[in-house]
Amino acid sequence: MPAGISAELEARAEALAARIIARLGLEGLLCVELFVTRQGDLLVNELAPRPHNSYHQSERGCVTSQFEQLVRTTCNLPLGDTS
Image: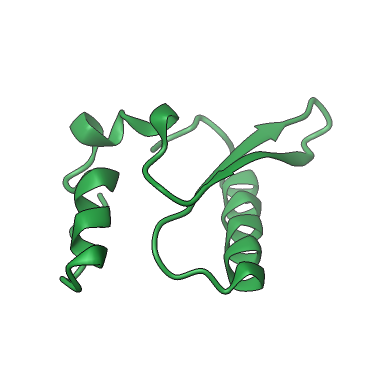
């Protein structure tokens, strides 16, 4: 979802989440909730290996919600459009 942050900060956040996922050896869905400090540092607040309650906007704001994506991964179906 658009967060109103710079492309550079978005890329750093995605890279951080990808490192966490790789380190955990996770397959499936992981919500990585981050805070941004005034200095631009990223702090991990919460990891949720499930659909996350702070992300219900995906139900209305995305072609395929996080909830449907979870069902698709569980049923070994292709992932839906994430736009």
